[in-house]
Amino acid sequence: MNEVYDVPYMQRTRDYYRAQGYTNDYQWAQNSATPFCMPAKPLSECRVGIVTTAMPDTDLGRNNRKIHSTLVPPIPESMYTEELSWHKTVTHTDDVNSFIPLEQLMVLEDEGGIGSLAPRFHSVPTEYSQRTTLKYDAPEILARLREDEVDITILVPL
Image (cartoon, rainbow, N blue to C red; front, top):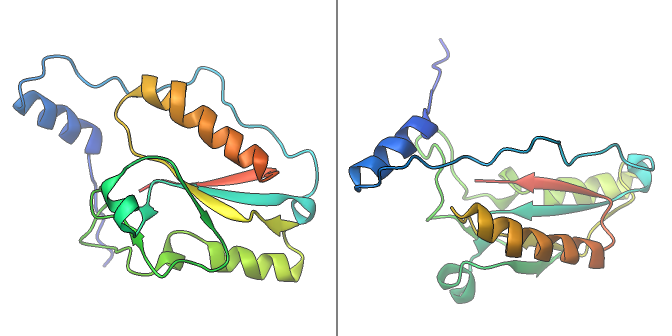
């Protein structure tokens, strides 16, 4: 029998902040207009980029939660995810390819399924400030994706 793991993270987050003395609930980000669009060309001609909340498993990545860009290849052997939240009793992040599909995208590139994989992937901090995310992080990530001439981006949040 398959067990269902329900993680009521929104209510748990509200309860957590209330327990710390905050009186206002966290305001979850909402977009009235979806910022997604259909690709202008077939996937087999698109350059694919990746943006993740996992940080490089380096001293800088572990100690400085800021935007990082990592060249590929090579695929990193590990990513720093210890400070991030996911259902750690039913999954893990020991295998980078299980949550960042770099190897799979390289195969698709070789087979012609995608035009190309971007030369680097990008890590973004998990800020709880919508203002910081919208004012600083999102524009910087967009600029880096444009530098890499990315057509489609896969978002990998943890």
